[in-house]
Image (cartoon, rainbow, N blue to C red):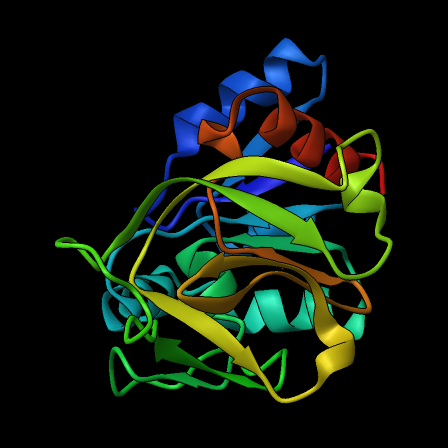
Amino acid sequence: MITIVDYGIGNINAFINIFQEQGIECSLAKTPDQLMKAKKIILPGVGHFDFAMEKLEESGMIDMLHQQVIMHKIPILGICVGMQMMADSSEEGNRKGLGWIKSKVVKIDTSALHQNTLLPHMGWNTVSKKKDSILFHNINEAEDFYFLHSYCMDCDEEQNIIATTYYGNEITVVVQKDNIYGIQCHPEKSHIAGMEFLKNFANI
């Protein structure tokens, strides 16, 4: 059973459709009580960091998320801004992040790029594994995923970096610390590779 945190942000229906197609049960959590029953959690997110954090705070689920993830070690996958929210802070705003992975979210350095449209980093790009992870089971060593972002996670601890992509500079794309996982790109928009990634998380 996958529980998707529904705090008013993210492609909720896309995740539901993918899990249903694969025969994986999923539910939505809009309250702390619903989140308390979770066995695995998806934290989606799109848009501005501060707005996403504000909406999550308004949902009343942050304390329960901390309890489930930090105390009970429930596996969680943050997606796009959902991954960025796991950091300590972001250059995109002033609010504190969840602080689960020692890192800061920074604006993508485009100084090495030579093109008219620099940001957002949008479209298909190759994700390259840095270390083995169950999340990449049955996925090629270098596979294309879909991106839409202008900020990325800058990790303090290199051992938390699972995969990267290249957009002028190397960008962290997938992270893991114990039961906490994150992916910057959009697996729900990444066709077969993205579906396999989500199925792998469901099978953790």
